Length: 62
Image (tube, rainbow, N blue to C red; front, side, top):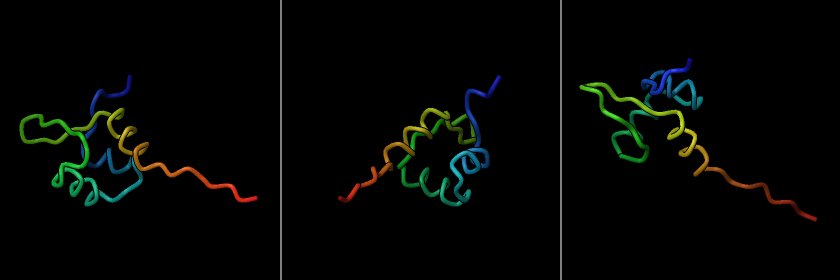
């Protein structure tokens, strides 16, 4: 069973970005996250939504 939420390091791996980028998204409140005590956690669905929002469709010429 996959975990319901993941931490910053795992979120960075999941999104193929540096940890610093994830921390910046959190600081700027550009991504949905959950606080569990002092820890920041993410639902994979929220990460998928963030990635989908940045999707650019290809343009076909001709």
